[in-house]
Image (cartoon, rainbow, N blue to C red; front, side, top):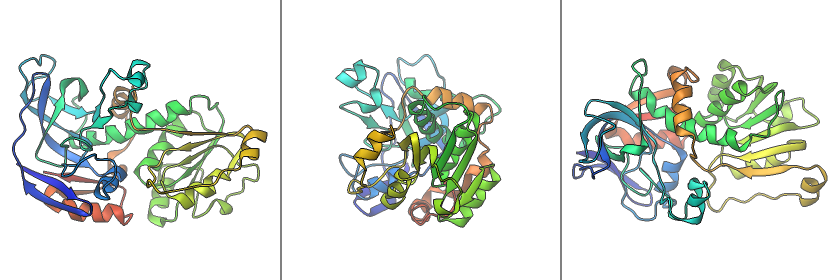
Length: 330
């Protein structure tokens, strides 16, 4: 089969690899679409994936074409979205319900072969069957949505009527915008240096969209500030925008070397909370339900659908900040 392969830091190509075969409790999925994510850029840089080469792609959906000998829950022809999370279920963090912090954390498309390919293998337990009204290729959006749902789980203490400021209006920032609206925010402001992306934030109904938080009239700061960029300069600015008693959520994936300075006295004196959100935790099925209920419009979120053969080009576009969600399709 054809698959995108990151063989070394900075090197990616589409190559022919062996067809996958399922284990007893696994299925083989014919991939309909696979989304690109910031994590893929980190893997390309040589981060995250413990070993290379690897077939990337942790946001995907498709049709079951083969099942393992002990699979009874799914059959060939079933359409599914796939949670890429792979936990050991044995370590301290798994035993206390914090599986996303698993000491042996792994993920399809990060540590094992993923969905940037014609076919991918997944545990049957990781597959969510799609309702009839959902297009299979659109369901690749469920995985990033599940990460956003996890982010709002972290923000569970946020009250109705809060003010929210989001840095970044790429796919994840826009998903956080949609969830903020659904969780009772009084207003959701968005900051981005990309005018095209800010235009999409306005389309989705943000309260204000600006190139800098200085352009927004909020002298007391915001109750909730979310970084969805991973950019250390944006993070530094965002930390200074949190109002008294507010919360800062690090949601964007920063480079390993990124650094930001905090003000300990201010954190103490103003009772500011600084927290983070790591991938998916008990949120994939809820994201699938939200997606089926129309929480996201795929036509707004998916800006590019390219053939798998153009994976390197798709990755370059994403790295350049073009479009919103970019997908590849075998």
